[in-house]
Length: 245
Image (tube, rainbow, N blue to C red):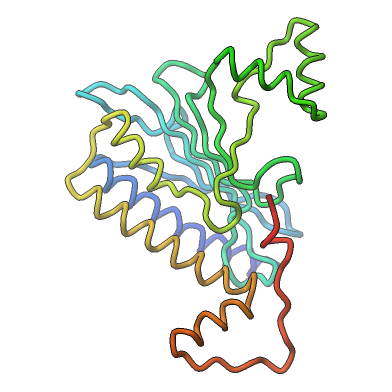
């Protein structure tokens, strides 16, 4: 087991360096990421997060306007061959304000009622709150009950689905949105770095997705002219991945 944990740690350190290079390159300033190794020996987990506890400073016109907090929880996949992200969170806050503006979350082992990749928006709109209380679901009834006790529902409790296991937003997506929507300062090469990061992530996800439905992947390759041979034992599609909320 120690060699497995050592191998995972090495892989995660390489991933952390990739985050350092990407974030520093996009923002045009040094950004640090640290690695914390969990203590579980049965299934090792390692956390990667920005080094600055308050979050990565995002500058607009020379002043820190926002903070970006980044966290990845990593494990080996079930075969202990590939690095798997168990959870990730990209949280954006206004400087000196504790409650976030919004955060993107990915929960590999999410419950059925929560999408594995989702967005939480921390804002308050009367119309949305009213609709949340009117919903005739268990959650809607619970919200109405809470409201009768003086606890008003918050939009931050809504979970917006964002593409599931394979197509969730990347850190590069969050950086680009912050550049376009909030005008944060960035390096001249930021666009190329963000595009390269997205390409890298999506190429990995495309490869991993073939394992979710090998037959569909093989059929698509044959349509492109590739020669694909069936294995001795057919590999079934992973319905849990293809159908997951």
